[in-house]
Image 1: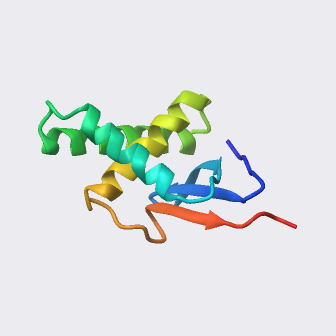
Image 2 (image 1 turned 90 degrees about the horizontal axis):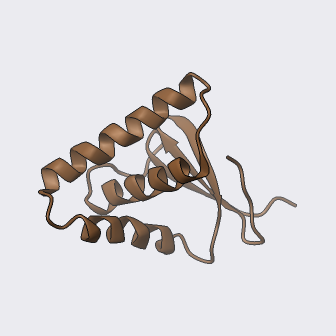
Length: 107
């Protein structure tokens, strides 16, 4: 799923593979807040279990992308939330293999 706004786009990666591309709001912190919101919404679940669930979901979407299976918009949205939740919990770092890339608008 590739999208771009007047501000550009945010590309999301898992294991070095481009999974999703979203329209960028003015700040990427809005997406980081979505990850934090996901963590707060599952506050009854132990953190270790949350981390496991987020990782399994991201890994499943990664495998589906590698197999070129159809991924819905809702699945992309949940991937974004899980990815940013893992980053908020400092489980993964924003680097070449996992995380996001802020892209300015193409000219």
